[in-house]
Length: 234
Image 1 (spheres, rainbow, N blue to C red):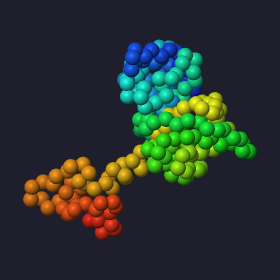
Image 2: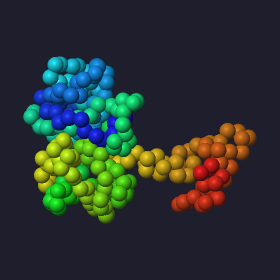
Image 3: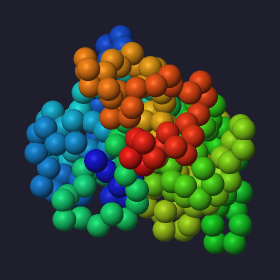
Image 4: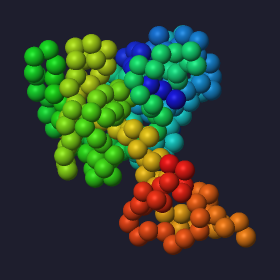
């Protein structure tokens, strides 16, 4: 698990894709401290497993699903990337819960200065926008940011000078793609609120309860009532 607080800007050393998968080598310093083979490091928000270490960096495998879901396949040697080690048990939770499992990509539409900050507008597909709420959290290329605006086609964040200096976000230009990870809490709540029948769950014989411990009954077609939620322990 990560927090979206970028520790270091690294550099792509090389990326080798044989067909639909391959490996990527990253030049770094800070994130190597205490890192061992098998540890996780987020690269532009993508959780990757360290498979080899060098004094100046590390290498990770990249599978087909990662290429499909993220921007890593478009990386070139020399490109800067945001890096974060997995959160230590005694660490501060400065950002939000970030799994490093990218939901999809968005496209930078514009960057507009306002005072000491910069407004970034990002186009995103509906399946990502549905989980974005104003003043909620989102990870953009592994950076934990607060959503300042959202509508049916775009969302916006405001980037302070510190974030601009410590991450790669303001090096992006209109048309560039970024990795997006929605706040995981909303996705879990949505799934738990779906009717049990949506997953084909069957109650134990004679138990009188369904998979969630609620009394067996026909699931509502669209939403739960307050009484339904009380019976399920909410």
